[in-house]
Image 1 (cartoon, rainbow, N blue to C red):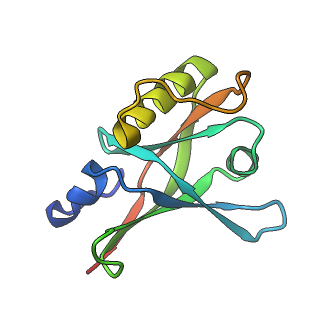
Image 2 (cartoon, rainbow, N blue to C red):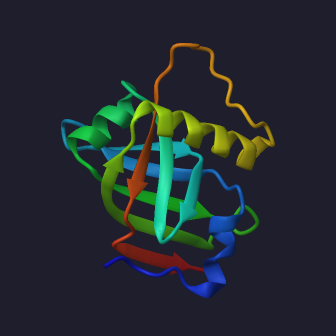
Length: 133
């Protein structure tokens, strides 16, 4: 069973806010990256090119934290911790990054510097949610 987002923090998941995604490096130290995200049916979704550091970290240690900070009040945030319960195939990953491109920039197709880039969508089950502000 996963945690529920309080009503007064729903705006943080509906706005296109860049979140901080924390993963764990091979040596056990934390690594944080800014990410686009989406939310639906009680789950969070993030995206990355396969082979990158966060992809490698998630595949090795599939438990992450996601922090979404209100851009108008840095002391108001939603913090999520939970397992990555699914890593998509390339087709789902590409569809998702296009959806995120539209959500964040109004562009229906995500453009990358690497035309051969393979994308993956990571599904995060929010087992623990905390809020502030």
